[in-house]
Image 1 (cartoon, rainbow, N blue to C red):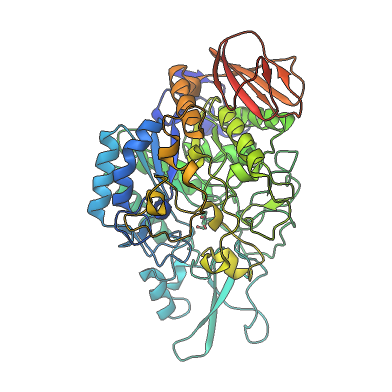
Image 2 (tube, rainbow, N blue to C red):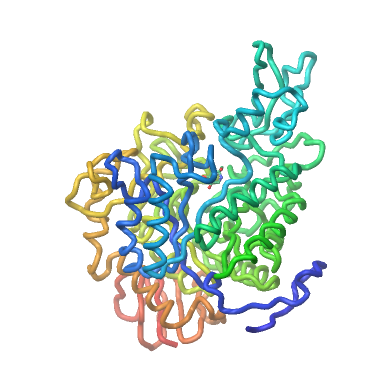
Length: 574
Ligand code: NOJ
């Protein structure tokens, strides 16, 4: 175990930061979006038994852990991020026994398993919210949520001007049991996702129990949804977000040159309030009661990185998704800046940096990296969006970007299907769309369905082997046979083989526990660094770059002689 530099700043809890080789510090964690991974029941929606059956393919890929997006009881108004029972499995996905079987199988294969915890809001179908609606104003049941009187003469206006992340107002008015209009409740997301009041100790008690329920079942950790949103500023003051601030509270994707573009904007009264940290300190104590290095990872859209680092101080969470990295454009100076900024910020509190390029909320990076117009996070892309990508360019850049990412020290997150090079599905029929964003904006924002299309396993099977019945809850593109897993496995040069090689080499050279040293002399649009025994060179410029003499371990595209073409990354033996 090493003792590293104390955290910069005032926080006494991080005066001495101990770091070791715990599994999560260098882990490659694969995100499974259960409804789109593998369907064993044949209803066209993926499920837990489908996941269990496909786990060996993830071992073959070479990942260390899986993170499962929500599979809990839910009316699925926001694809399971609207939980009606935190301690049971939705019949759509199976049963608790199916979960136990999945967990046992994962552990037997050496995979850690992280589940999603959604504490900012429940579903409006949750028994707590139903009881709150039935109870009187000022009751203990209502005090679990954010009920407020309206403004205006008859309370007909919402309590403040906050907008839902998915579009439209963040408040919905209730109807009293006698049919008269009642109080309003806050929902930062859909109206079916009422926000809990985390100032209420009763709410805190419930979630400690929920953590224990899953820890007792043996999970290795939690991905914490909206980990920047649970505490709201006292008095709930009005707030108007800057025009380009992105849905989840992040910045615009893809084209911005700086990290933390919104640094001058005031902190919204519903994001990144100091009070959230007390909650995570409390949870950390719960996790620390268990053996086996259980972890929490924050989904916190917080900038700048130095502020995000507060979520991963030694007595809080273990990791936070690095959305600043995800939002960085494919440009050498921006990449170097965000890598340096990430390593500085996270190292200062003894946490590993994380790296991520895709997830179920953003345009897949095989498309995003070739967009030519601004596309705020959460808006998605559809047939009428400006800045349509050239697919070949997107894939080429995605492969180069993934190769670069997987050579960085720390922990990396992969989103199911990126190892196949899957693009965003841009031309989904409108009638198939399910994201509440689409409905709440009357189709103005396409939303996130395009990155959630069920993934292709077998080129020649119905629904590409996704479902035993050939059904698929979102239509899959007709041209996905060549990107199906079985069409790529063992095929030199395929995206799947690129990922498998990168993960094997990353492991062999211990890159996750390494450190980077920038290499000078390549020009500002070339990202060149050494991580231990591996030299990585990524060309974000539009001209070829001469490679040094040496053995090439991996290349994101065919190499022609000693020239590294634009949008290409190589790993070489240092
Ligand atoms: C973030 C999740 O990743 C997203 O899918 C969800 O819609 C919101 N949080 C609300 O829970």
